[in-house]
Length: 99
Image (tube, rainbow, N blue to C red; front, side, top):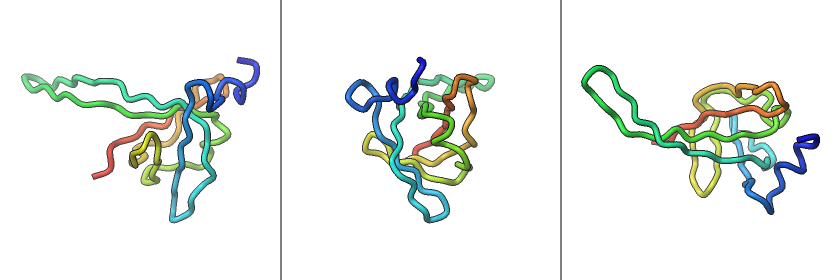
């Protein structure tokens, strides 16, 4: 995409995410929310889980750190890692369900 703002239009498939870090609520950002199924195996043990994450413009995720919270799709998630840039102006922010 030449223009990521066009790609992340809320009327298409993007949703809004609100990130709170250190008690400060950031303005809502457009993102793509994904929660793929994950079947992890450790030796004989299996665990079914999901790995929620958002894909957003890298510039919108600058400074986000582990420990922040992200409200998206009607749920609040914990941020479990710093954003990972994909080299195309977007970044992935990994999330976990809040206890």
